[in-house]
Length: 80
Image (cartoon, rainbow, N blue to C red; front, side, top):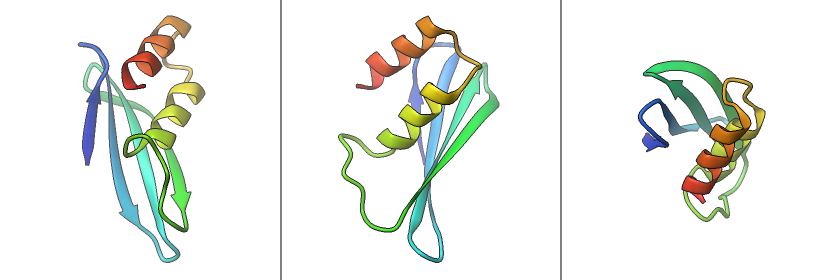
């Protein structure tokens, strides 16, 4: 499990889980310490990402309606 702090209010917790046919990454959006949104990305083989959990985190940020546009831009810029 790994935590990505965006600012004092926003953070993302990501973890990897094994499945019968491969593995999955699960990313959870935390606002003021409370879980408000979550995504899961399944994989059959290894991933090719710039950093671990990149795909799940980007999917979460782009999908959520809990962040405004400025917060999404800030989060994506901070995470790369």
